Image (cartoon, rainbow, N blue to C red; front, side):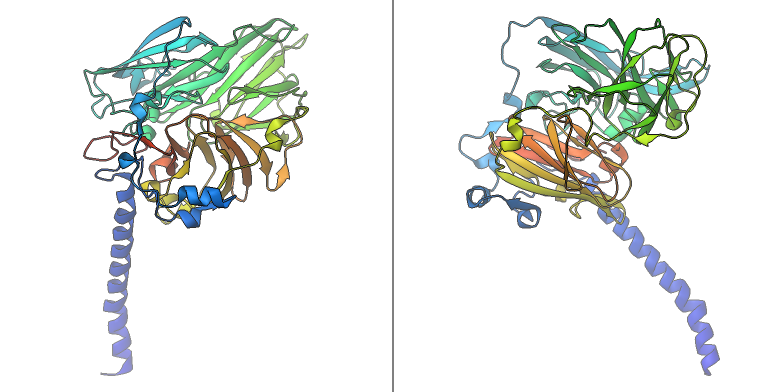
Amino acid sequence: MNKRKIVKRLIYFGLPLTLVVLAGAVIVTYFWQMRLQKPEEINMAYHQMTAGMSSMINMTDMDGMEHMGGMGNPSSEEGAVSCSSITTPESSAPIRKFDLTAARTTLKLDNGKTVDAWTFNGISPGPELRVTEGDQIVVTLHNKDIEDGVTIHWHGITVPCSQDGIAGVTQDAVPPGEQFTYTFIATTPGTYWYHSHQMSSIQVSKGLLGALIIEPKNGSESGTSTSEATALYQQLGSSMLVNGSERGRTIPAKPGEQVRLRLINSGNETMEFGVDGAPFRVLAMDGHDLHEPGLLERTIVPIGAGQRYDLLIQVPGAGKVVVSSPSAKGLPITIGSGNQPQHNEEGQLFSFLDYGTPLPDDPVLQAKPDRHFELKLGQTLFTKSINGKSFHDIPPMTVKEGDHVIITVSSEGGGDHPFHLHGHVFRVLRKNGEALQGSPVYLDTLLTKKGETYELYLEADNPGLWMIHCHNLKHASMGMSMMLNYEGITTSYRVGTKSGNLPDL
């Protein structure tokens, strides 16, 4: 057989065989990695507790290293405390009761289009829950007919472990015909939201979400009359909505009036907002006020998935103000009346590195950290990863109550990663090695982009089992989800197909 025939046979038979083998390898790798998102049964209180810790954690002293050594299954630890036993203490605070019923609903939008949705109380977004600082919030969740079960997570609010609403960690998903009651104190005024944390990437996009506003007990600190409005942006299937509308929002306001605009991004992608017609201030981020925020003009405000920004806008003597985002074309927020302002296509990006002013004698800057964790957000073949691993293969960050913790978060690609931590707020200390020079910035969700590195400070002051994940919920469903666990805290619940609890699917 001559060489030409051999080459032809290799081309005719060898190349297709090679392609088949490669395709088979890709398929096997895909399903092998996807198994991480649907394990049979995992206890998130102690999964991977000892495996891989040395590659993930750099302790700041030997005491911390000794403290981590030899840790095993906390369910066998003497004096262990169950997450479900960590509840809201009895209180004489005013009680605000709400009922939310999750159900399949056909919604008719204001443009005449109908959408099959999953709703709270027949609407999406669900009812805005508005309370006062210090109130005791009691919410009873009823599941009418969501077959896979449902929960409610209180995004950005510091609640006791048992009330965090994470299927398989703090509770079982509530099945059809059943109910679950959440009780917690509205401790910090600000802009928050709630959503299901059972199969979150599916259930949030179906419509199971809503706004939660905590008003300050003593009213506005500003001496000027200030009104306010909430604008919750959501992706409901293929429809982008603001407060459930496909036509934008109009806010009545008189010349000279100040408006606090609470922007909530409940979608998966970063939204960039511009303000035309007036200067503005960024009053708060993720519900936490900034110190002495300055006036901004021709500035684009990027809001990551899950984040909230409160803008303070004073209506001009003539004309209206328009707040808009290219991500939500046709959904402007119009404040006041009069002539349409000129639209500015370009502007500098808002940066909190030097915005506002620092606090005098800031105690956080003097704190000595007890532990240091490094988290690298990226992508591994078909999954989104943290330190090269996904979901329950990622060792948890383990702390004890009272620890001062430094977390270094860097993004190595795979899209924007809004880094969200449950049960706590953290303070941003540095970006790309540069210390913040302006107001202290406290967040529960941090927008990270490729090539960025942030140093975060955390006080371990809320014992429990807490999820950490990318709030692009598609990324979380692909594995970018892990745990912050306190020593000695256990759970009787399990994540996996056996229980049906799949919090980040």
